[in-house]
Image 1: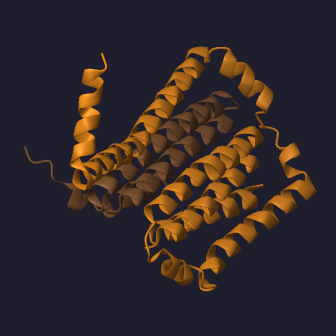
Image 2: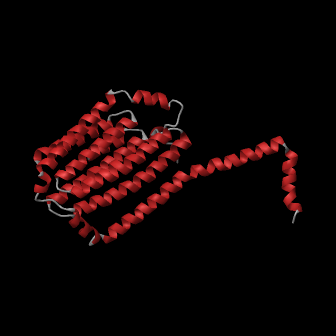
Image 3: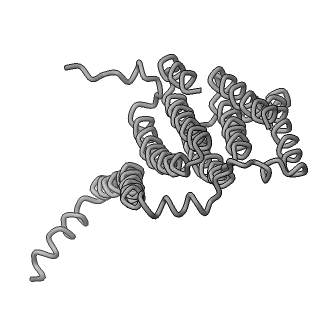
Length: 196
Length: 87
């Protein structure tokens, strides 16, 4: 128990240090994922399997996908392919893969030996759910409101850019029309005033 | 891990790294909560970790949307270059 805890914690701390010292964003993301997996294993060793599963699903799943998408959207340049070639050199993969294999071996060992079930101080998901929807019900509601506000805010901030090109596009076409044939445009603008 | 995230938050000047170090700090705080909860055999620590998780998710979504807007507007992610708020 103690040894597995220290191994997982060491992997998490080492990968965090390596993450913070990377110059490239994608390498840092790889190390950050390994760090989150290490923290999840620490939770599992500590007797909190529910939180460990949530850590992997939400942090390493959802939030990392958000980061990867933003990095992708920021790199929409002509030199993106060249940078990809530089990134895919095999030396980069060794660090995260080594740390992740340590974690995998440790998890396999834990599951084989059933050490997590022997943990006497394990707090199962049932107790967490009871106390989550018992005394912490207002907190759950506040968290849902916060997530809704985050959703609306992210949509508002991200969707403003899609409206701008349409306006520009409209202006461009209008300018082209006026430049190409000013009489037609003048006739079109005068037509609706005649019809009523 | 919290101090690591804090130092990198102060040292790094790329906005994405700032967000990632914020993630590390929130993660370390949640780890402390879970460790304390398992130390005293209470489920409150894990409940607090769930709240931290929700907060981190909301914060990261809004922060990344802001990063996108800033990048489109300034074509740079350097905090020193972006400091143009002059009173």
